[in-house]
Image (cartoon, rainbow, N blue to C red; front, side, top):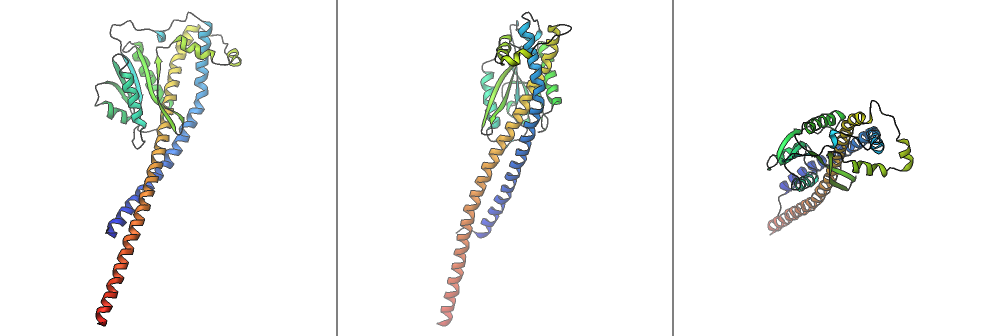
Length: 294
């Protein structure tokens, strides 16, 4: 028979855990809404920069820029920016990113990792891959300053030819139930890809993309690219942050359901044990009364 004291202690511990998981779910919900709101507020600005780049490339076929540079070195290196969380308890959020990074590293030459997030650092420090830099913002909501710091670092290293390509791996949130580890190449820019995205814009918008650039279209383009990359990084960081909160919401919701199920099971066991104890006490009283009567 299960000890009533042990059952009460288990029930108390599970009830406390249930309070924590419910609180974490509520916190993640609030952070998710705030992160998505920040991305929506800044997205139009970077979309405008992107459209200006499209406009330049659509009119100027002879744009020369270091950001289109192809590697001529015998030993090219590839930088991979990896965005993970600073905390756990988010289900398979980080593991999906790790799998995508491992797959990408097997395909590129001489991968160098640029990490964002403590969990990613703790994982990749035990692998064979070279960690070039580690950025940790202590689980804060990503800001433009954070994105600018990373963008400045990566662009400067790219222009100094430390590496020849830059990829970014993060989690994209298609919906609260569909989170996918995604990979994009940031640098070098591919004209065909950019122009393809231009032609996907409808005709009405394309007519609006007509500006005069001074001192020249090429110089303006080189000034726009760092801002564009900063926007891409910021968008990826906020998207990853929102995905992390969504994954944590789901994980905490499942944990809460499991805790409630365990609590219900223990309550049944507790009631059975208490009823058995009461029955035994009644039997002893009846037995004692019969003995006294005899």
